Amino acid sequence: MKRFALIGAAGYVAPRHMRAIQDNHGDLVAALDPHDAVGVMDSYFPNAAFFTEFERFDRHLDKSRRKGTGIDFLSICSPNYLHDAHIRYGLRQGVDVICEKPLVLNPWNLDGLLELEAESGKKVFTILQLRLHPSIIALRERVRNSPPDKTFQVKLTYITSRGQWYYASWKGDPSKSGGIATNIGIHFFDMLEWVFGPVKKNTLHLRSHDREAGLLELERARVNWFLSIQPETLPPDVREKGGRTYRTLEMDGEALEFSEGFTDLHTLAYRDVLEGKGWGLEDARAGIQIVHDIRKALVTNPPPDAHPFVHLPLQKHPFDSKG
Image (cartoon, rainbow, N blue to C red):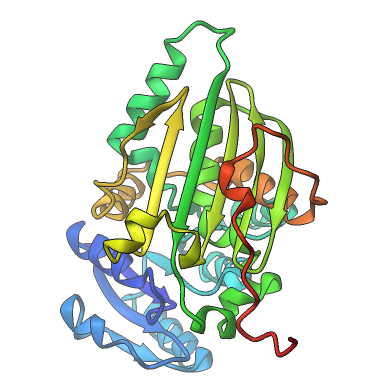
């Protein structure tokens, strides 16, 4: 049985990692988070040691290692800007690391981790779960089997409503989260590059505190994309039904269904890691480069064929005291 420790136990995505560890017959023996709202652990690993201070967590892991009961993996679900430091910590502890997306905020951070990975002899894995979704796998095969000169016209829309808490948290600080495209879009951009090939051009049409949009020109597709955390951008029929999330992918006018089948993807990702087939540092590079370039891009006027949601009315920042 593999032994795990987890950093970021109170985070939104942490229960998926706990379930993945449990489903793959692992044991979570220690967890860390500065916040103590971690009652969810009782549903998975009630006997795991829990710490709110890094120093005590570190001491516990060190004592366990010296006794021969150390961990095999460190799982990381901490805020985006801390991933790099926490991955380095895991490698220096001599264990393999599994880290949530985005693996790091900047592509050059990967180079330093590759060096440390080589020095330690351990591996860093990331969760690129859409690559495991049956509908996305089928889409990739469809593209590969199409005429090589075919360029697909793709429209991606992802709206996941967030309340005012978002802006008060680290997620609302682009220096910590990387911004909208990085924080909620990284897995979609990784998926698009994996399906349609390398980036040829990356253009930004809209940047706001609650939404971003642009055009991603890939080897096999032109992708007009729109990402938002603003519920006012939801289609009226979704809002009328009380919906809070809207996710669509259209290719040449055909809607592709992949809204279901997300619940077990972390379990599958962990299974692959334990079988030696997980996604590593270089696998994450393309997606990280895409969102980094979006973060640094200047906004250009959207062309007539831009994503139609680009023209939706903008909302004032909830913490803006002006006006």
